Length: 159
Image (cartoon, rainbow, N blue to C red; front, side):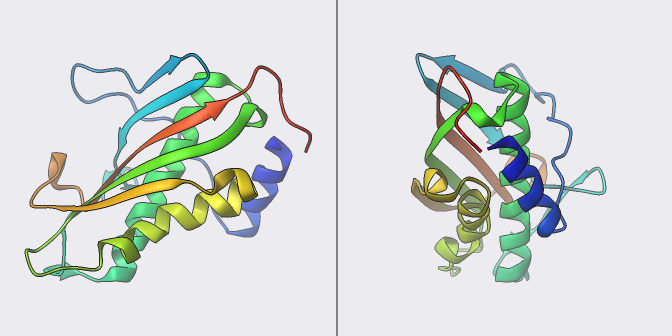
């Protein structure tokens, strides 16, 4: 599966970033049983956090791009935690937090930037439950933050 994910990233013109270090008193991942819990990840572009508010300066498309960047960071954190993306059995759940103006109601469309990437990379195993929530502010002024729960197995799945 790792090779398939690498090929798909290349097809999409994307690459995994270096897994970001925590910015406060927490760890990026916790493995409990076969579930990997991944702390909220922010969108990075050119080494800087993508900031702004949806419905007030940022378009849905810009929000989707930010959500996709968060998803890339989630995958980078998974790889850093378990070493081999072939161990991913299922993306169980994404929690997507969107820095939104009070009148903005397209949070699900923004969250699709993360959800669609998970399906593109992991196929059926990338289909997940999800929350898409508008919030008035996020850490560092980020436009989007995404956390995840991922089921992992002991050995890599077939490619």
